[in-house]
Image 1 (cartoon, rainbow, N blue to C red):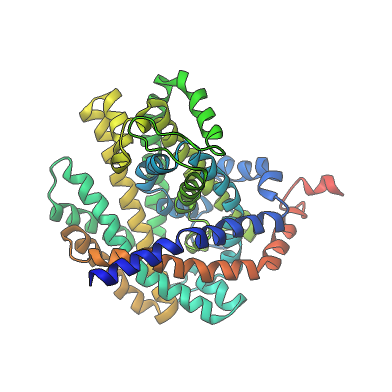
Image 2 (image 1 turned 90 degrees about the vertical axis):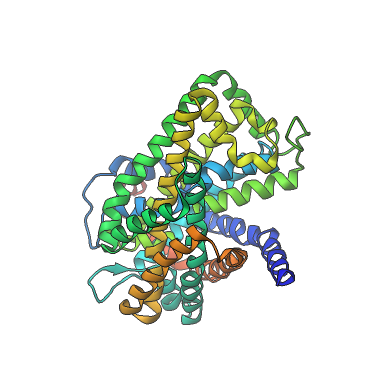
Length: 455
């Protein structure tokens, strides 16, 4: 059995090395060029239409507001890895990994835009009158049903061990303040159950309040640390750019890193963080009220900015300005943010902020990915079976709390690759449709006021 698990680990390690980086980064470059570098050209307008209209009433058809759709998707992308994954990337790739994380996010925003625009174009109403969509719909209608089925089945299965693994993070965090595993599992299952059984409307109502709160709680604490170390910020930014292109030598607990390792860890962190190319975000966005697919797709760029360029960058500055990245060994890198908070705010208060942030980040992620899984089951087998899968997902929370399915975690990365590959094939093959919808929006003064200036 161990030999088999070692083989699975080796396969997933290879897939998530160069092959997946080529697929995702290459896809981001492809869409950026195909769409005329629009994320740069129209950035002021995109920010105005998202950050500037978070609470504005939208026009068009849909089930939830554009902001609710974005916060639902953000609930999935903003997770514990925003706190513990960034220092791990720095520990193994050096400060320069953050530069490659930024680059991946900027390119990935074109992918996220493309996925959401297709999700809205090909969405439909289900038996309960709710708008549903995502890769399973646009792959089936726009390319071939085979890709849609592979995506839907792969994601439906992948979420069982994924939810259990997320629960382990909550359990381990709760253990630090003395809460038993089973008690944590029961509380998480009750919270998730109460929310997801209310459908996308209740999920949206919860996430539109929870996501801003949990993000601000963590960001305020992190910004206090950065302000206290404000004199080191220029040096930290200099390290990011300097070591993006040059090897970094060993120092203290840091073992050093070559350029290849720096790129690998930065690109991986950017990819895992914003989920661009994974196809999950359009599942939430497809329920949004909007008058044009491109308008809602701009909220995909909003997600990338918030998740990677704001939250992950803030964590990176905490890690670099405190100097802990050179003191803590790589095996303990995930603890750096907690140590930084505890060092300046006290063990109880500082550690409490990190603990509560991780708990909220993980619980919000579980809530949304349960919904994602339900939609795959609904697409494949109908709304009745989606209720069955909902119960299985809730059960997997308990399994994660008590243990026993850890061997399934070995398959997570392979299952995730099996989801990304058909999605990326579809997005690339439908480039022409994406480009046409983007041009339709930005060339029409009804949607984009700047279009008048071109005529």
